[in-house]
Image (cartoon, rainbow, N blue to C red; front, side, top):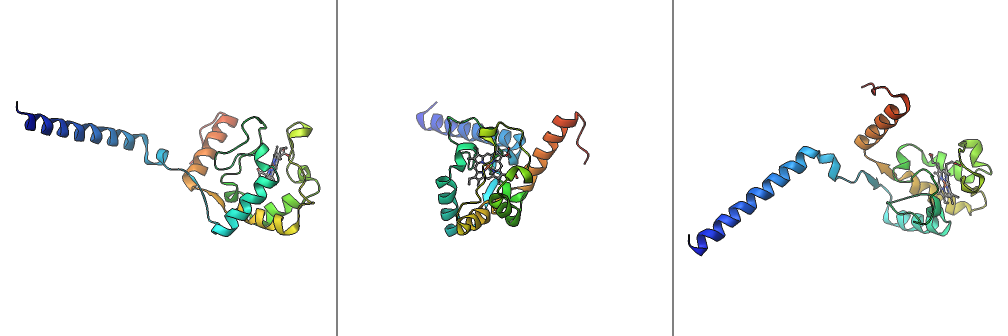
Length: 160
Ligand code: HEC
């Protein structure tokens, strides 16, 4: 075989391998490669929202954009997608409540429960609530999570 022919064969081989890998990924499901979380906020609200979020130590307990203070192991709910289950008004009221556990009961130790942010400047609470409400999760992921939670909690098959 001449060198040119070898190169062509190698190239064809590579194309076939790439094709097989590509179709295997497709079988795994197109959803598995998407990131299901996104924000609908403007650039301005995102920047200010994240600034207030970080300044107030929310990331000590919560994860957002897969970021969390790695030394902490507080089992607090993650903030990704929170805006798909809570409205801006709800989030504002929750942050403003002198006693967040009256709104959402806690199952955790005193030091880990959600602190009150009633003393945060009102403008900051507004932007933070607006930003959190913009954190969405795609429908298929929400459905899948609900299904898994339901089946874990009840031991039954999730009704369609
Ligand atoms: C000390 C840990 C801690 C800190 C700091 C903290 N949280 Fe929480 N948060 C929690 C826990 C735990 C819960 C679940 C309710 C509970 O146990 O009190 C919660 C609940 C929430 C919820 C409700 C989630 C739902 O299921 O609807 C939101 C929204 C939230 N926190 C936002 C924030 C924001 C924004 C900040 C920063 C300004 C913050 N948290 C700071 C621990 C914390």
